[in-house]
Image 1 (tube, rainbow, N blue to C red):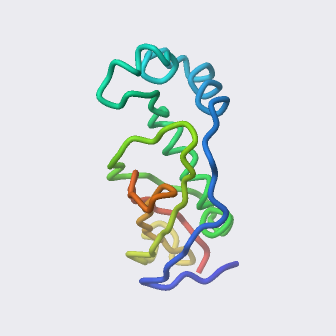
Image 2 (image 1 turned 30 degrees about the vertical axis):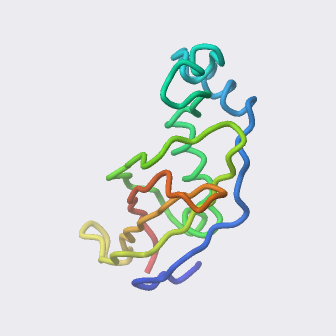
Length: 141
């Protein structure tokens, strides 16, 4: 079991390049048919000039990037909060993530466990921040 420390930082590796198939499959599975995500001609007429990857896929992917360093050591993921999409993500972008432990407290329900609060920031291949969120996990002492 990994020991977490206040202010501990993680640089999650490897990143993931988003493919057209990733975006299309996620739209299909979640029944998201907004043309900004799936219709190249529609997207050309928007301020973005190309298809934007579905935000919930971006969030899910970034959570996945953190699993090896954080969630693998958890009893449970308790919550996610303050999810902010800072910039659009496009097909072909490569996403990376970094996290920091921002709070550690004892569980009120079980003193043999702790709740760890983590802030994660995702960024693309150009070092542009595209997503941030906080989450809490439950771990054994």
